Image (cartoon, rainbow, N blue to C red; front, top):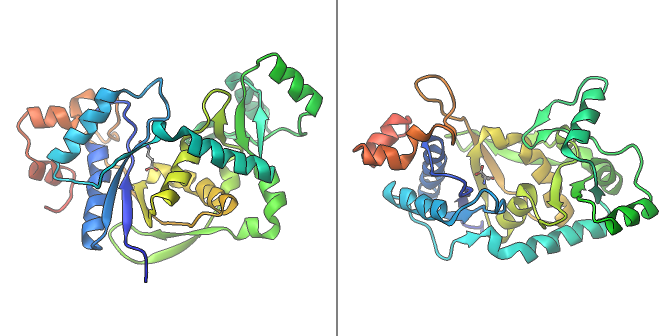
Length: 292
Ligand code: GLU
C-alpha cells in the first residue's frame, strides 16, 4: 500500500507570517485535503538568535485562523538537536563532511577570485571547497586554539563515494496544481559545499530539513520555488543518509501589488495586521488567488 500523502508547513519563527507564508501553508493544506492526506506543522527554530517563542505562538494563531489544523505534537527542531548531531556523525563516518575554518569574508574573497565568479546560492556566496584537504596537524592546532568552524558537505568527497551514481541522482517534481510528475536530474554541485553545522550548532537548515522530512514520513514537500536549488542538495543528502526521497512541488512566489515578493520586512502585510483590519480567511484566499 502506498504511504499516506503527507506534507508539511515548516516555518521559522523569526517573525509573524505574511501573505507568502499563507500561500504556502494553504497550498500544502489543500493538497493534503485533495489526497485525503495529512498536513504537518513543523517549527524550524534552529537559528536560536533569531527565533522567538512569541512568533511560534503567533504562527499557530494565524494558521488556526486560516482554518488549518495539524496533528500534535508539533515537532520543534530545537528540541531535537541530538538527532541532527547523530545524522552529522553518520556523514562524518562516510567521510563526506569536513571542518571549514574560513570566515565569511574569506569565503567571499575566494568566490570573487574564481575565474567566472561563483555567484550566490540560497545560503549566500557559493563555496567550492578547498583545493586540498587540511592536514590533521593543522586541524588539531586550530581546534586547540578554539577557532570557529563550519561543517561543510563536500561535493568532491560525495562524488568520490558515490562514483557514477552521483550524476544519476534525481527527484520527482510535480508541477503546481497538477499530478503530472517530471523527473529532474539533481545537480548538487550547483550549490557548492553547503554548511551542515557549526562549531556550536549541531545542525543547519539543510541537515534538519532532510532528517525531519524522512522521520516524519513526508511524501510530498510543498514549498516556494526559492528553495528549488536546495532540493538538489537535499536529494544528495537523502542518498548519503539512506533516507527516502519525497516528491517535490515548488510553487511560484507570490508578489504584492507593487510586484515585489512578500517578505518578512513588509511588516504591513502580516496576517495579524490583515486580520486586525477586518479581512476574513476567505478574503485572504481571494487576495492571493487561491480558490475558496
Ligand atoms: N523553514 C524554511 C523557511 O521558513 C522552510 C523550509 C522548507 O519548506 O523546506 O523558509
